Every structure is written in C-alpha cells, then in structure tokens.
Image (cartoon, rainbow, N blue to C red; front, top):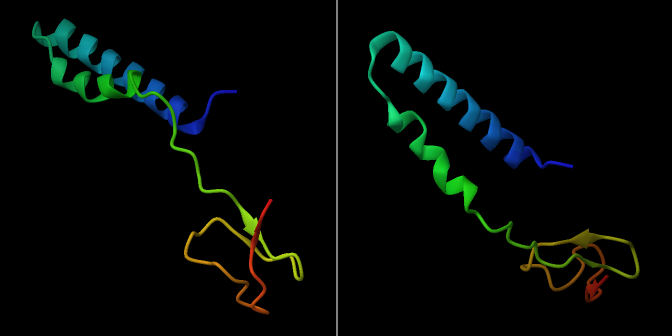
Length: 81
C-alpha cells in the first residue's frame, strides 16, 4: 500500500504538472518552477527507522523515547520488545 507521504508527493507532482501545462497552454510560457520543488522527493531513499520500542515488564508502559531508561510509574528498567 502507498504511504501518505508518497500519495501527497504524487498528488502534488501531478497537480503542479497540470498547472504548468495549463499556464503554458494559455500564456505560451513554461513555468518549470512549479514542478521543480517536487523533484527531490523522487530520489528519497527511504524513511529513517524509529528507535526500538521499550516497555516495562511490570506495568506494560511502553515508549520509543530514548530519554526514558526507567518506568515513570514504578522505576523498573525498561526492556526492548
């Protein structure tokens, strides 16, 4: 399934191309600057991975925030899942 970021980029690219073609047709000038901002999105490799989720074995508290080493409820060290 296509991600939300990819769908937004594709919709923006298609929209900017359609606007550029319409402006070129009506005014006989090409507005390439409407298409250029979306070009870097085509070469994006992938998303950065999120930090691993860690949870408290005692109460079930879980977080991806690296600032938490211990459970804020009972002080138990967090474990990776």
